Length: 240
Image (cartoon, rainbow, N blue to C red; front, side):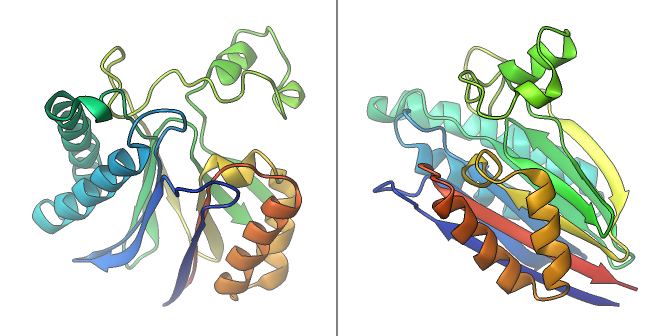
């Protein structure tokens, strides 16, 4: 097996980068994640860092079952962020999105998602993504708008759930897939709100196993497209 991965995070036009990420081997798994501290909230960068710390701890302690470890990371992060907000009033209201994946040596991949950071599953001919927990996606599911109307929608940043939200219980989605001869890209919305998914696929496929170049190219494209948010990308590519 060959397995390549790379991560890049850029503050973009903002003074503070509220995104955090993970891209490393922990025990029996390659563990990847992007957490986007919610813009406009106090200490978003603290919330995203807590989520990534909880992910690492979960795989150090519960690495035998990837789904259990991912769920434990989300549950513990939700508790810790809420406690932090109570302890430090200036941070009250902070929260984060969370997209994470665990990949074993057979390239079996388990993904967990809360919020509107995304996982993209990319092959030479196709790209599919996780479902955003957003108001706009709810409008698509109820038929009030069409999928093509979501691009640059004025309500695109309104989330239905996030880790650390005291008003909404976290109910993550799980996905199971295999990365053989495929790519997994995780991103914060600073990328996918400004670069269309077909363009993302073209960049990743054209660069083949040069995952660092793909990440650099995608961040540059987002900035050139006018992204006014933090931009984080984690890309992995495996072959058996």
